[in-house]
Image (cartoon, rainbow, N blue to C red; front, side):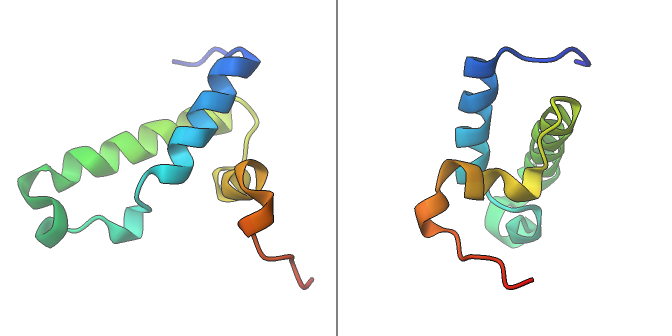
Amino acid sequence: MSEKMNEDALYALKIAFTYMPKAIEVTKYEYGERYQTVLSHIEAVRETLLINDVDPEEVDGDINPEYTPNSTY
């Protein structure tokens, strides 16, 4: 998938991404044999965000600005 998403779909993907586990949280202990699949799903969503000019590290602040600490730099 290398084409841009419409704004509504992109917003929905941002919301879903905020509730996904972070890759560092995905372990074989927590997710069993499917941990590699979960990691690949997270990476697919990150890539789609990047294709749509969205920084995955900034998504949570975009969706939940009231819960995101202010930057100090």
